[in-house]
Amino acid sequence: MAIESLVEAGAHPRWVRLNTIKTTLQEQLNTTFKDFTQVTSVDDVITSTGKAYYVDEHVPNLLGLSPLFEITKTHAYTSGAIILQDKASCFPAYLLDPQPEDGDVIDSCAAPGNKTTHVAALVQSHVVAEGGKRCRRKVYAFEKDSHRARTLEKMVNLAGAQDIATLSLGQDFLKVDPQSPLYENVGALLLDPSCSGSGIVGRDAMPTIHLPEQPGAAAKKPGPGLAKSRKRKRENAALGEHEDEDEDERKQVLVDDDGEELVISSEKEMRARLEALSSFQLTLLLHAFTFPSARRVTYSTCSIHAEENENVVVKALQSDVAVRRGWRVLKRGQQVEGMREWPVRGDIKAADGNEEVADACIRSYKDDGRGVMGFFVAGFVRDPSAAADVVAEQETANQQEGVGNTTENNDAEDNGSDADDDEWDGFDD
Image (cartoon, rainbow, N blue to C red; front, top):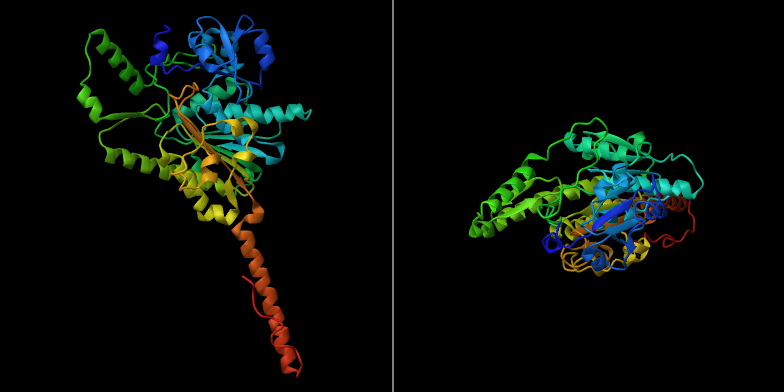
């Protein structure tokens, strides 16, 4: 890709996550990137015509490379030691930050597998840090779409995460029983559901990236919808033809995070689509809240729309299950360092004017010069001591104790006791 095409491509670097299951940052700097020059900003790496890398300041083990560098031809890429993953897409697993005491992890909508392998690497890193050799914690990855499930399986195997990640291919997370003994130790859940994909960097401008094929595997053709769209645009351009601009102004094409194209012809249709998506997203989030041992959840989308982002967070916090089980937003001051320092936060108006909730939400925009896609992520933590069901149990116990005391007082009166009628004067609350 020529330098002049970088603007069209959105001026984004090639973000590369070092897969710590197989390698380390230092090892890759000594091998794959030994001939590279380190630069100090995203702008420098984008405009570099040579070999340059930028060590990200927010997400550990993440490098930004020049878009011109053919990273897919390196052994590190084909072996799964490094993974192409947008910086913003690394936020959910990093924000979740599953600790040993959090137990097992669930990735509810796992394909294509970048976030699954990232959270698996984080789980493994804690085992190594504690001197362990074998990870006994599990990452349960669900993907209901059979085609996307095959991609997930391939990605997990390539990353070497198959001993950590347990794949539930073709299984819908919403149909999983939270009370199942299999998930009794699940303490952290990552939710990255289908969304409008409105934050995704233009697919037509950027080169297509494919996972390395396993030896002997037959090459697969691109998905039909997207491949035809690209081919048609290239053919029209070659013939000097241009699509009707007025028609383009009347219609919007949403390309969701599954790669599916949906033509939106009116504002009303757009609102209906966003309402349907946000309803599904909220249902998924509330289902995650019901897992008995759950204590941490991240919710994310590659959308710029408040309906799918802050609005969902606010509704989730106001839900019966959140109040009953003590779920609250993960405040900015309690987030891992890199996410705490990320400067772009949620929209206060979209968060119903709640500044604390808005500040807890993390956003990114694809055209703001930070070199990332449009993205949103928020974290939730559970405080059992603040749960309404705990309060209700205490109230019930108090009531039962009060009834017992009242009975004793009545018995005393019947026996001619001098007990003071005002000794018990009801409940404070």
